[in-house]
Amino acid sequence: GPAQNGASPDAAALEPVMRRALELAQRTPAGANPRVGAVVLSDDGAVLGEGWHRGAGTPHAEPAALEDARSRGHDVRGGTIVITLEPCSHTGRTPPCTEAILEAGLRRVVFAAPDATAEARGGADRLAEAGLTVQAGLLREDSEALNERWAQRMAEGRPFVTAKVATSLDFCVADAEGRSQWITSEQARAHAQGLRRRVDAILVGTGTLAADNPRLTARTPRGEDAERQPLRVVVGLGEVPADAAVRGTDGRFVHVRSREPEAVLRELARLGAGHVMIEGGPRLVGAFLEAGLVDELWHYQAPLLLPGGLPAASGLAPRALGDAARFRVEGTELLGPDLLIRRMAVSGEA
Ligand code: AOF
Ligand code: ZN
Image (cartoon, rainbow, N blue to C red; front, side, top):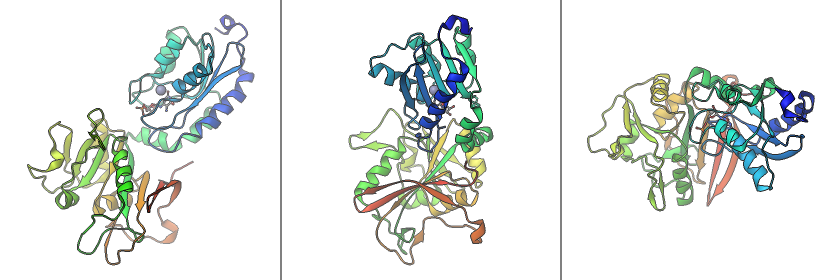
C-alpha cells in the first residue's frame, strides 16, 4: 500500500503529472497504435524521465520514459511511473512494458485508461501481483478522448487500414493505355518501399496482380528484409497464377476470395494482422473508400497531369458535398520532385 512508499507523491500531486503525460501522448503520430505518454518520478516526486510512443513498431511510452531517465543518469528504483494507458502485458512488435517496469525496480504505477485489447490487457493485474502499487483511472476520459478511433477499431476487432497511392496531380495512377512506370520519382518509390516494413499485410486486387505481377515484399537497398516481411494478400475472385511472384516461397501469401471489405478485414484480423496496407488497384482502393474503411491515406503526388488516365480510386458512388468523406493532413514531405501527403480519415475522430 501507499504507506510502504514513504514520501511518494499523493493523488493530488499526480494530476499535473498525468496532464504532462497526456501532453506527451499527443506527440504520438496518428496511426495504427494508440497515443501514449509516460513520466517517471523519483520516490520523492521529482521528474526523472519522460517518454511517448513514436508509432507502431517503435518502443512504447514506458520504455521510452525509462530510457530517458537512464540517459540522464537517474536511478529510477523505488520510483513511480505515470502513464496515459495501462502498460501492455504482451509481446507485440515490442516486448511487454510490464516486464520493463519490473526490471527497472519501480514501486508504483499510475495509469489513466485501461488497455481494452484482448492481447495487451492484464498489465495492471500482473504488476499488482508482483507487489507494485497500481492506481487506475486518473484522468481516464482525457486519455480515452485521445484514442477514440483506435478504441472503436479495437472493439470492432478490425485492423487499421492504410491505402497507398502514387498519382499524378489529377489523381491518376496510369495513363489511358495503362502505363504507370513511372509516375513518381525513385525517391518516392524508395520511400514507399519502407512503408511495407511497418505493416502486417499488403493487399492488392487481382487486377493489379495481372497488370504488374508484384512481389509485395519489403526491400531495402541491401535486398529483402528477412526479419519482418508482411503477409502478402491478393483480394478478389480472380485467379492467382501458379507462377505469380506474390506467392513467394515463405508461406506468407494468402488469397482472400471475397468482395466485401468488411469480410476481407475480418479474415486478416483472424490471421493476426493489426495494420494492413492497400497498394491498389483502383477498384480495391475504391471499395475500401466506399465502405469508409480507409483510416489513413499515403498519397505520393507527382507534378504531372494525365488527362484521360486511370483514377486511383474507382467504383465509388456519387456523393453530395455535404456527405463527402473527409480527411485531414497529418504530415507532408518533399521527396525529390514529388510530394508525400499523409492524411487521416476524419469521421469518428476526436
Ligand atoms: C503500452 N504503451 O506506449 C503503447 C501501448 O505490437 P505493438 O508494439 O505495436 O503494440 C501495440 C499494442 O500495444 C496496442 O494495440 C496497445 O494495446 C498497446 N499500446 N501499450 O503499454 C504504449 N502504445
Ligand atoms: Zn507496452
